[in-house]
Length: 213
Length: 205
Image (cartoon, rainbow over all chains, first blue to last red; front, side, top):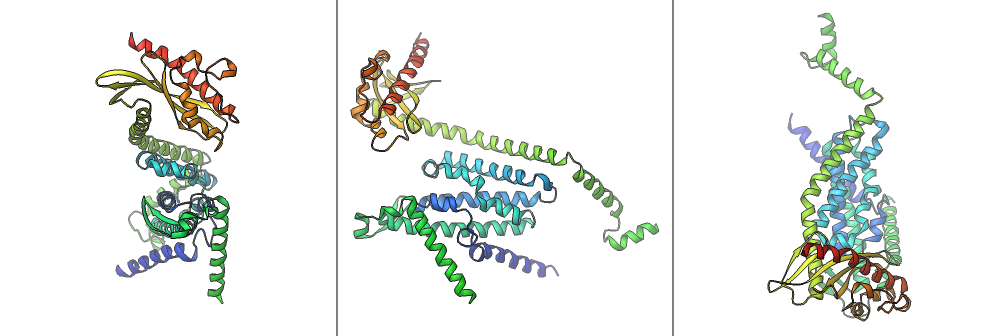
C-alpha cells in the first residue's frame, strides 16, 4: 500500500527532471532565457557561474511559490512571484559579490537580470503555482540542468573557436595549435553568439523533426 | 446527530468534520476579503526585505574587506615602501616601518563613458605622490589612455591648486581626443583633495 505511491512519485519526479532537460529544454525548445545564453556564454566559467545562479534562484522560487500557491491571491500573483524571485536574486548577487568576486565582475548586470529571466517567471506561473512542492523541485532541477546544458554547449563552441583553447577555472585543458595563435575572435563577439545560437536552434529543430517522422 | 452522519458520508474525518468545516469557511472568508491581496503582498515584501537584510549583514563585512584589499593592492603601486595601513573614515593612512609616509583616498568622477574611480596617494606634505585609475569604462584606445603612466605620471608632486588642465591654468596636459576623460580625472582628484586634506589635517590636530 505505502510503496505503490512512492514508486509512482519517484517516477513522476524523474519524468519531470527529464522533461526539462530534453523535451522542454528552456533554451533550445522553449526558446526562453536567450539574454544570458547570448551575453554570458563567452567562456565556460561564466556559463557555469550563471547556470549555478539560475538553478539556485529557480529552485528557491519554485519551492516558495509552490508552498504558498493555495494562499496566493490571483490578483497579485505576478508581483508576488517577482518579489520572491528578486529576493533570491539579491541574496545570490550578495553572496557572489562576497565570495566569488571575479565571477561577480564578469557576470556584471546579467546576474541581476535573472530577476526578469523569463525561464524563472515562466516556471513559477506555468508550473510551481499549480503543482506540489516535490514536483516543483523536480521541475526546477530539470529546467535548471537543461539551461546549464544549453549554456555549456554554446559557450564551449564560442570559447574553443573564439580563443583556440579551453580554460576552466584557470586551468587550460587544451589548446589547438594554429587556432590559438589566430583565434576567430568573431565568435567571442556578440554577432558570434547570435550565429552559434541560431545554428544550434536550427539543429535541435531539425533533430526534433527527424524524431517525429 | 442526523446532520452529522450525513456529513460523515462526504467527509472521512469523523470527529473534526464540523470544526474543519468552520475552519475552511473562515479561511475562505479571509481569502475572499478584498484587502487580503494587499495584506498578503505586504507580508511577502516584509519577509523578503528581512531575508535580504539578514544576508546583507553577513556578506557586507566580507565585501568591504575585499574592496579594502583591492584598494591596498593598488596603493602598493603608489607607495612601494608601504608595509601597513590604517583605514580611517574617509581615507587610509599608509605606514612604513611604523611611521606614516602618506595618505590614500578614493576620488570618483563622471567620465565620457561612465564613472571613473581613482586612487590618490598623498605625501605627508599633502602634495600628490601618485594616482592610479582603479575603474573606468571610457572608450577603448582613447579615454582608456587615462590609465597610462604618461598621463597619471603628470600628477606626481602637484598640490591641489595645480591639479587642472593646462588650458585652465593647471599643470596637466589633456590626452588628445579624450579631453572629457582627462578633465573628469583632474576635476575629481582636485575636488576630492579639497575635501579630504582638511579632514586629514583635522585628524592630525
